[in-house]
Length: 108
Length: 113
Image (cartoon, rainbow over all chains, first blue to last red; front, side):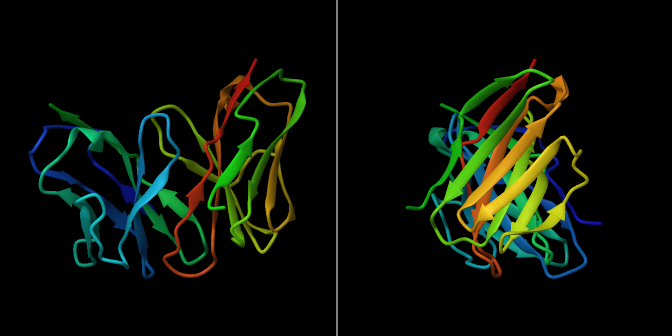
């Protein structure tokens, strides 16, 4: 089965605190994994993809095939990071499947 | 031009109406998608077009009918919808190939009355 699981619907942290948004996937093939972000009243946009191993806006994500995880991390959260975050999996057949999403709230 | 443009932004239609949603991109992307998104929920895949051919239909009811007239345009024809079909309809496009980014439109907010 192809599935993306984000166990936390809401994550609330204070500004400057570390943040980790969890993502686990189930896929028998070689996964393409992404993190998308949706700020209030804005369109869904790509934040990170696993293949590039880059840091965007201070966020990083590492693919752990043994644990089938792709958690998103940031060492020091900022208020402007408050948004809905979706982990997504693209299958070899071309489907882009989203997890349930985690709403991140960064309090001042 | 790195945008996916959707029209209209808002649409209210009755259950007996026929309407169409439009999506346009000029990035040369050969994969295009329709998603449905309810409030506080993730986008749910409806259809995937690859090189203007329908490649994936996620068991969507026939009252939704997609069309890809050319490589830049994607339509979603609506007929005899139900109130529960009210949602944000998102269009996306991406290049073919591995690990490519999908670009999303702003969506059409559909209300069925």
